[in-house]
Structure formats: structure tokens, C-alpha cells
Length: 133
Image 1 (cartoon, helix red, strand yellow):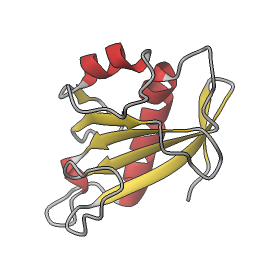
Image 2 (cartoon, one colour):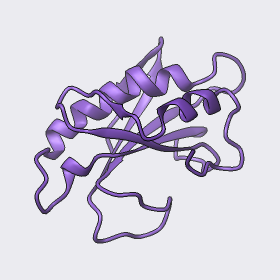
Image 3 (cartoon, rainbow, N blue to C red):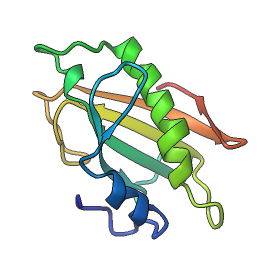
């Protein structure tokens, strides 16, 4: 299992353990795997859950998935993966950020060689509403 933030919600652990290194089907058909969840870094909208995924097909050099296609995959991941991982009780996130990176990148550290896409969503009525950055 990948390292997690210290305050990781215990409800996420079973899902994360099951998803680590298992390809997640997404609309584009690219190979995406779960990397980690960060929830102890406050976002501009308040409590924010960040679900991070590895997606080698978005790479600048040799990648086959562009930003517009990746957005569809990120919306899909928010609705089918992240929303299932958000606990139904306790503090609810004001925002969910889905990120794709072509390689593992430590959270918050610069990595100019990596290709990364980020999208923000607002959880509303059990679904993800795209907010964009």
C-alpha cells in the first residue's frame, strides 16, 4: 500500500488498499492506477480530499491522452471512485480534487519533468460537479 497522509480517514483505507496498483477502467481506455489520498491539506473551499492517480498515457513525450480527454477520465474517477470513498458521516469535503500524473510525484513538491492534470469538483447530491481551476 502507498503512503498516506497522517489524517487519512479510516473509511478510505479498505478502498485504497484494494485499489493500489490495480488498473481502474476509465472512458479513454488509458491505464490509470490509484496512488494516494490527501485530506490534511486545506483547499481554498475548505475541507478538500485529493485523490491522486498515475496515468502514464498523459506524458508529454509519447503520451496518447490529451487534457480534454483526461478531464472526462477525472470526472469519471470522481463520480465512481472518489464519491464512494467519501464517508457518509462526519465532516464532508467542500471540494474533491482529482489529479493524474504520468509518474509518482510527492505531494506539494515541484516536478517539472512530470505531466500532471488537476481538476476540482464539488460534491453535490452524491455526484461530482466540475468546478475547474
